[in-house]
Length: 271
Length: 296
Image 1 (spheres, chains in turn purple, cyan):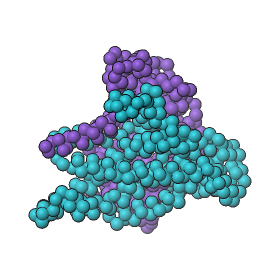
Image 2: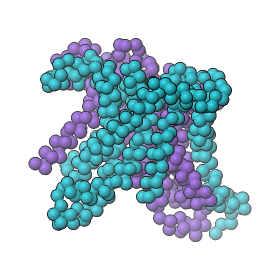
Image 3: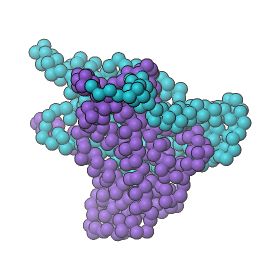
Image 4: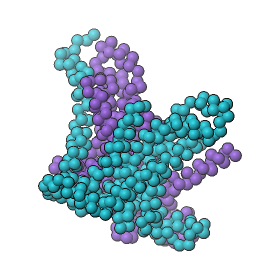
């Protein structure tokens, strides 16, 4: 009875929450004929790899994949590094105005890209950053740095001060404490921040859509929507193959670090 | 103790080092966030188009969009979309958290799987939904016909109300895990003693929920809802991918309309005015978030 009361609703949630992913997998391996005419759309009779092969050989998908990977990894490294030193300065150095900076960072965290993308477009043009893939790195930092700094502020607050005081008595400089004492302890927090940054960058759409224009500079989401959807005839097999491969890196990183992920997610609402 | 040179030790003072360490973040956030925010306000007061700076026109753009039925429809649907989706996410997310909070076999695996919609790139899962909602080959229609609930395929995205409803469901689908994890953290911080005391006093499950769980979850509810509402109100990915604001602007929201007017149509000034207009709601939400975060 207790089992039914838990697993019953859980199954319903599972069906609702996982349906689109099941659908991606199914469509990826179904032949075109079967996609349009089948006795049961929820199963595959004859599987095929042709959609994946076509996607990888006839479209620029691999290029988009590489672009997304480059931008995500680079923005993650840059923003986690900058966020760590910023959070350290705010929490540990307590310079005059640290409180103000901390509030400003939080406010920056809740400014959605949706109200920035138009004026930012004119700035990108003036800087000649338009259609330059690396330009997405500083742009993504605008939402990653506030988020990571906020997460790391919460994390650094909980590290006891005694540690660095002991080091200070031994003559260690603030910079040495930043690298040798606090950094190793902060690693779990940095991992949380990095996973979130990677996922958020991998997920980004609006900025990449507006600021990248040539096929060679597009990310997966942008390339698929702007180049794989042509006219009214949708190549669903190819589209779902692309979606499935595009979802995989985010999901793999997530499964690998699921505990850090959950901790960061709960932390972001707690602090 | 090793004697450090004067310059180095001055560099290491909390004040100097503090300002040095925040400089990179300050440059990026001032240049690419604060400045564009102000520039957006300025742009919305000009007749700028793609390629032309335009002139100061005062509140002309705001007058134009307020008189535009498409903008008013977009504002209305943005609010409706946000309110309905937040209620759905709150109720279903809380229910999922209560479910996951009971220790059972497969707890970790279930929790990990339930988070997938939040982890997967939105545009890619939106494409899967687009295909699930296809007018001709929808698997959902197929299932409903098999269950004898409907007679012919539903054109989910072809009619204003079914399109609006579909988008709200997809938004709930994506945001529900965030609420579930937030609530799960909240539930796990509630002391078990409270429930034991309530049980001794003869309180049932529902009473315990109403008198203990819900009041203690209220602060986290405020943060989750206000936070999620800010990003739902300015959602772009789901709507742009699934309906583009159609059929005939029925599902247009602030961001999709701003994108279409400014980027596709080249009317930067008007687009900037549309993009900024949800700020009225967002300031209220931001104040709520900042206050509740500070209270904790």
